[in-house]
Image (cartoon, rainbow, N blue to C red; front, side, top):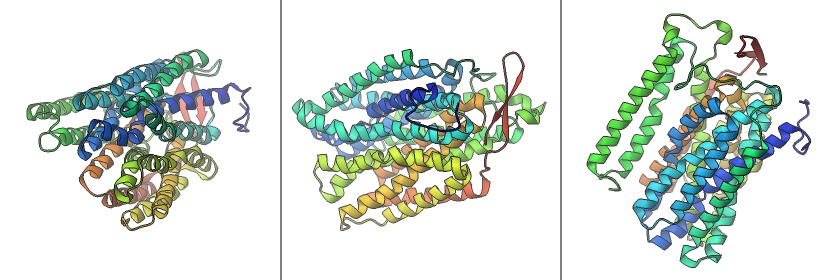
Length: 489
């Protein structure tokens, strides 16, 4: 592979893989995040309340939390090609079922199930990590993430027009169905046009399955603790659906879900111990170690960057309609600007990380996220719409660049665990979305923005004080026992 990164060099296999894979990611987001721009149409057609609409937005991101963990494990074991095909095909079918649901209960269940298509993002992180060297991983992962994320902008720019011009009150059904059929078709095509690694390269797999491998006693304890927010986010969702709030599920079902989450966490702790308990008896050789605190900090960083993106793109159209009395199509177009900037901002974050360093880039972007959303925290309905849109765009640029910077570092932690690390980091992005959207359902929009700014400030200091810049090499062992050294800077 040449040192020069040329996005138009389609004669190179890795560049073709990059384009094929960001387009697969694009299709997952077109289907998954198409809910936001179509929600005003769904709400009107089915006469939903504001709370019912907001709960659907929360449900849309909830399933992605466990799905990204599971998909991260599966992609490390099975490879990206088969995983992306499966996610696009199955996700498209569930989305079609949602589009033709008849009542709110069906909508809620199917939207919850649809969330797993958002886990497709994790698959591409492993694929791109296999095809590009460390010196290009930031820009490659940034383009993959940024251009793929553009699927949410594609949904905002196309689905409302289809909903308006096709099928009358059922226009939103046709819009979602057409997007889903396109995803299914591309998922089938993807299987036949890609391979998991360059010719002659080894696809490293974890030594054990069921939990991430860690390499020290401290990391083992931290890993156990870092699983708690994943279950707390699902518990928060359950509370939101309980009789004390939406009343979508009964008290007995609520208690059963809480108990099930506790049992699942206990099982997860047992799996973590089963995979890693040996570190208490026999230290892992220094050459095979990595620092799990790096993963933990990236988890919280992505909770803010991608959690903010998911939450804002989900509520922005409704915010513009509610606070500024803008027509629905106009609001959808203005909201579409926010994900549109992914085309440049996320690749830009990855590219800057390659040039000036991963930690320095994250410090800069988190300062920008904090300032932007604290400013939006003081927004009033009397503000000019252009000013609100402008500040939102600035916040979006920093948050999307931050997502690019996070995943510029993810593949440099431990190669054989890239899928699992990407899955956990990605799951925390959805934890952030659930938290932020839940806050959005409880408070006014200005307080929602202020909350994001405060959380971003806390993570800024975490990065500043504890994150370490990747350097040197990581070591992996080939199936025949040969040690391979992989450069990380």
